[in-house]
Length: 379
Image (tube, rainbow, N blue to C red):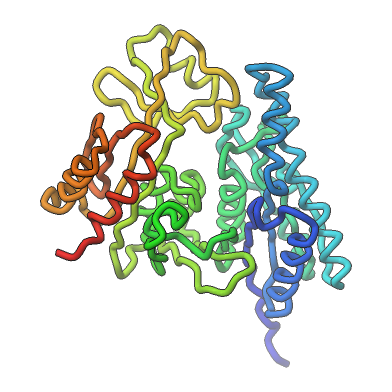
């Protein structure tokens, strides 16, 4: 009597808003998932809202209130992913592939109580595993979960990536594939630096630093969770050919230099009254404390910052490479090149694998190009 065969491996695939922007693209995603099933894999597909739906819903909320209540905001913006998941399930069924759509709460994603920027505290994947056990594709609404008080919560920018990674860890998936409109992670945004090269391999530690610096393909919470829980990640194109980028749990064989930028930052004085509670209440994330000011990420604020904070806009370029800060002979070339190009360096710093420069927002793209060229120059 032969031994029972091992169950087919589970893969988690995440499809971003540009990949599911309209019904034609959703049908193409369905065909891609069907091909994965035909290849002998069980699939959990995590989807974002279609195109710019989330931004449109946030804009609608801000028309209703300049500082929308964050609980009600979560109720509003969580609907975008639910639309996508249902449509994708319909398309898969038309292809003859069994599929079932599930919300974040139905998938067992439990979060803390913070609205519009919640953190995952637990995953209960029983229903997901029951769904995929017989080969049914589970389609999960990304970006959302439920708090222990049974409130709908959302996970902040990049939350669908976070959903995919936490589910991959919970079900012990073979790997997690982050699918978007670009084939992997590049040494800089190719729309800003045409000469930017795709990185075939990237250490997850470096990926965290790039995400913290504003890299659009990577989101900090997701990459950090993958690093901490040993999830194998690939960033790849949804539709085009290409090998993507492998994000390694351990050090990759190469230590590439990558440059990114961020203009969604503000500086606030740490001496302001109730500064930390005010920042937490509006969903801002403190990136660093430098002297008497905090550098704050405002992506998940979705409203007006309190006037008491006297926030000042900040734009920064960040370069990441192994022990880059320990090579001033190398990164000073970029520093000097910024000055030669007439870009005002308002502040700068270096530590570990990271060097950063604060520049005027209107010169941010120029600064990325200058730093990238200087750090990739031979010698």
